[in-house]
Every structure is written in structure tokens, then in C-alpha cells.
Length: 199
Ligand SMILES: Nc1nc2c(c(=O)[nH]1)N[C@H]1C(S)=C(S)[C@@H](COP(=O)(O)O)O[C@H]1N2
Ligand SMILES: [Mo]
Image (cartoon, rainbow, N blue to C red; front, side, top):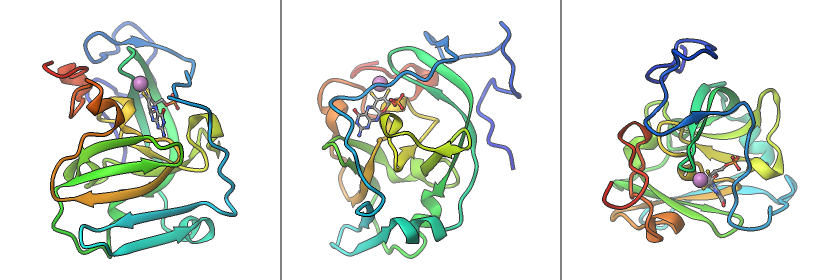
């Protein structure tokens, strides 16, 4: 099954490419981080899902690599207006990560090793729309781009794709993350140009 977002029908590089409003195309892969890149060794890396009752589901690196992976090819859109088309990843879908998790939560806060947080509706992470990705373009994900592993939620602005993701916290109420508390839009749909609060 191909992952295809609106306006993208293969690796087109011509003017007929349809981008979300206000975006421009880039072939580069800019790095945008709030602080220094945390160096997380796969020896100590762990990933957890915490349900609202406190139940913790945990994987170390070895266990994580044993989970079934997928290779989505997706377009990504940064709120600073660059878009990159047809990016290739490998990762574990959030559906897989939540398979054995019993929850009534409607929201998720992603927590990262650098202290970054971002909030999302749980349903936006389900049905093959989000991954915890550990390869980019066939190689191990570079630390600058979130390696060992990052959240990948391509249908929302890229600030929702938490780099160095460490924990997905399932919550009953919606709790704004780092940028959301700082004036960015709570949801961040690039096709509706939801950059800032009030958009
Ligand atoms: N942990 C963490 N995740 C993060 C950020 C960050 O500073 N820390 N920046 C966000 C922002 S604003 C963007 S646009 C993308 C940038 O990802 P890139 O550096 O791989 O392009 O990561 C997002 N995820
Ligand atoms: Mo961003």
C-alpha cells in the first residue's frame, strides 16, 4: 500500500506539484531543534508508552527492532514553510505500538530526550498515519534528525514529529506541548495552514 498525501502522485519535481498553502519546495533536509542534539546511545535508549492509569509498556532498542516495521514514503511540511516531498523512512507504526495497550485516552503527549513535548489527538497517530521511525532514506536516522528514533506524523506540521522520542503519554485531556504552549496552533494541519493560534 502506498502512502500518498493530497497532491502528491509520485516523485514529481515540476510546477504542477501541489503544496499546502504558503509552503515552498526544498531538496535539502533542514535541521530545526530547540537545543543541542542529545546523543542517545542505542545501548541505553528505551521507548515507553504510558497509559492514563500509569501502566507502562517498554521496549529497549533490540526489542524495538524486532517489531514489524513499515517503509512509508511521505511528504513533510515545516511551519517555517519548507516542504520536502517523497521522504523515505522505516519505522514502527503507532498502531503496532498500541496493540496491547488498554486505554480510553483521546490525546497523546510525546516526550523526547531533549525535554521537548508535543500534543496530538490519539486518533491522528492511528490507522497507519504515524510511526516511530529509525531509518531515513535507507540509513540509520542521524542524531540531528532525531536518531535513534523520532515520531513521524507527516499529515501535520513537522513540529509534531518529535525527534529523539522517548515516551508517548496517553492522556484524557489535551495538554499543550512546547510549541503549542508558545503560541503555535494546537492541531497544526498544513492544508488548512494552521500555523499559529487563531489560524
Ligand atoms: N525533540 C525535538 N523534536 C523536534 C524538535 C525539537 O526541537 N526537539 N523540533 C521540531 C520542529 S519545530 C521541526 S520543524 C522538526 C524538524 O525536524 P528536522 O530537524 O529533522 O528537520 O522537528 C520537530 N521535532
Ligand atoms: Mo518547525
